[in-house]
Length: 142
Ligand SMILES: [Zn+2]
Image (cartoon, rainbow, N blue to C red; front, side, top):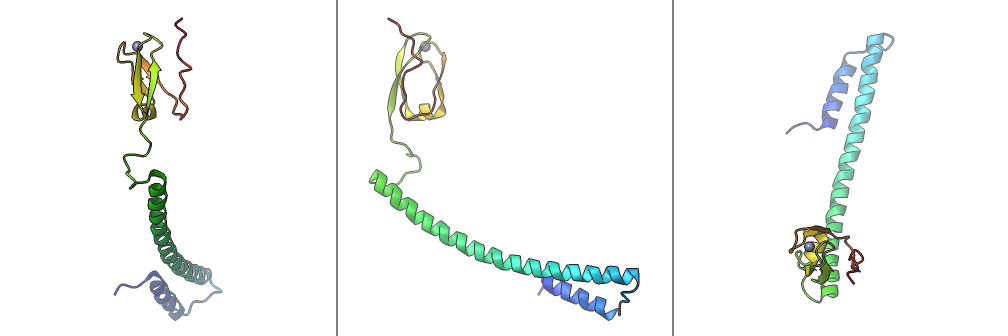
């Protein structure tokens, strides 16, 4: 079985201790300092691994709860099974082309897209995505 990071550090610091390091020498002090940092890193890594396992379990639990909640809320709101392709109620809006005065209807998908070319004159018409769409860009033709 492969050694964990903590086990490798323990092995390495064991080897360093076996060298009978003289910490009055600069090289010895450097090695002792490296050993200290490695021990600290090993402790931190072990702690992080525990936290990741714990967080992963919590996220899985939240994810399951959220799935249940989503199904409940969407079924309550729509009175039927939630369909990903049906996020908004279908609706149609009548718009008038400011260029050629042609009147035509657009559905919610087009409004969400934000623009359409006029079917009569190909003028590009843009919409602001809003639930109270008003024809405030329509020229007064009278
Ligand atoms: Zn037009």
